[in-house]
Length: 248
Image (cartoon, rainbow, N blue to C red; front, side):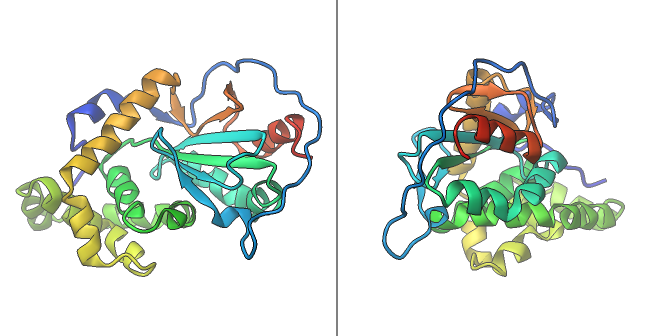
């Protein structure tokens, strides 16, 4: 049976990470209403993406007084639900006002997650956020694709014999991940090259291990708002916290 398994040693410690868990909330989140800030000429704030020194991608006004960080897995159904529920509201009412800077950090849970996160980072930084959101909507199709081939013994044997980037590409292809990104501007050759970049693949795994330690992550999604861990995983309570912090 073709199963999702961990490619790199640092990921072995993540097998207990769940989808939807969280921890105790820290600190208080109360603030005066903040003013909207105009984006650069000819742009919306959601189009302004800045790679961060923590391995994430900050979307919106880098100087926004309200900073929301999401540690998300591309194979987590709760993360997918958050993406679906937040939809355009997060972009239009919070990021595009210049009041909220939203940083996305990939928290890798498994092999499919690692491959999808790596390919999403193959293009321009500005593409990472929309690609992540679109992939969340593709998640169920990906799982269905994997389910459809789990008993194909010949395919399983062929993929099991592969290693490194070749294996990652083969699994991603079966899952439909390669075609998903090809339809969005990242070619098969580009995806294959990115999945074969061992250094970058290891970096993603190592970042996840570090996030787990530094931010006490017990499940995904995990949110930090202005440096405080908030014990919520759904859009409605996250929105409430943003409003409490002054995004209103």
